Image (cartoon, rainbow, N blue to C red; front, top):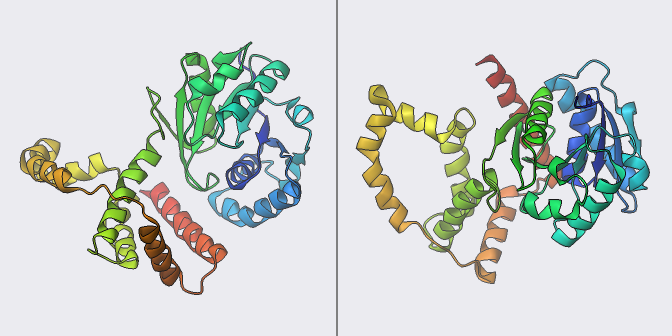
Length: 310
């Protein structure tokens, strides 16, 4: 029998790790966090305190409390009683393999080791585990994890089906929206989609077609609004009218294929980078990153609340 998951170890408490810790606490779990960086505990507790009002708005689970957080800079002590590990360490494969080797030696075989890695392959990470590589899985969130429901799940070559199923059930139980990848691909899925769009963004800016601010508006006030409601397949089904996807392919596949042929492949030169930086700075104006993040999160909370009623 797989152990019940009540105690979570969060390894690495940067932006992603702190956000995960906030979510786990809001769901009534016991959390022990660890990070060797100076001032890590103070920064983590500040992040959680500032995230808590948003989590209250989403809805706290019975027993949820910031007091359920323990911080221990000694990783082995921090993970000793963990039922589930959410790892958010630096994106270096040598570092990850060494880390997972240490986790593998300390933790029993029924403890899932989930990585938040945005680019590394689970198959490479789990090479560090000499005892139980089958319990290593990807649990990749979208920032900020305590608000955005998406989490991508994929196993490596040695990951067991049971581990994948346990991870999916765990994240779904937190109110997350897990999607399963059946193959490992660089960048997983959501970041690949984002990269594909941003490639064309940079091309259009570099070609002088549109300004930085206007292309942000073109995305966020156009297709981005629809993407916050449905994915592209469902939206194109609606675009096909009464004929649905069949009519969409009959009517629009040729024009779309024609557009693919003229999409750009920009070179990110120092000049292009500086142009985008200047454009973004002008668009942001006097607003700080904290103010813009709060604006983003406030709108996201409203959208999530609306989606619950839909």
